[in-house]
Image (cartoon, rainbow, N blue to C red; front, side, top):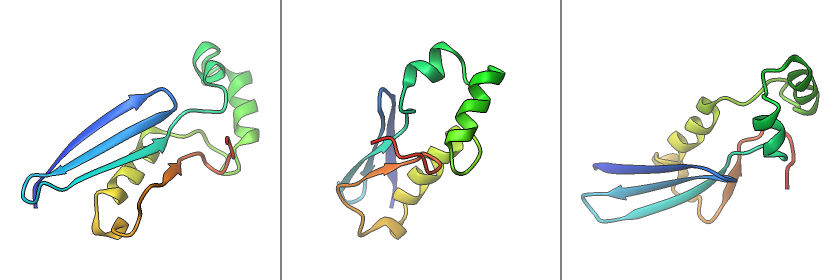
Length: 99
């Protein structure tokens, strides 16, 4: 099986599209990928000590998300382990309920 992968990261979601060249099967997923207030993370900068401290208090896992956190979800979706997953938005949020 040979997959082609397309990823569009931005806005509220990261879109992942997979195309199986052998069978022609197409898989599409959306992964929630922005904080509850994107301007807070972007405009103020998540590395400012004050903002970082406030964000860390709001996140149950106690750390800021990294690109690898979304990548792990995408990796799961590209395996047979996700065969029965359809029509879902998977929130990669560290336990923060944003919606």
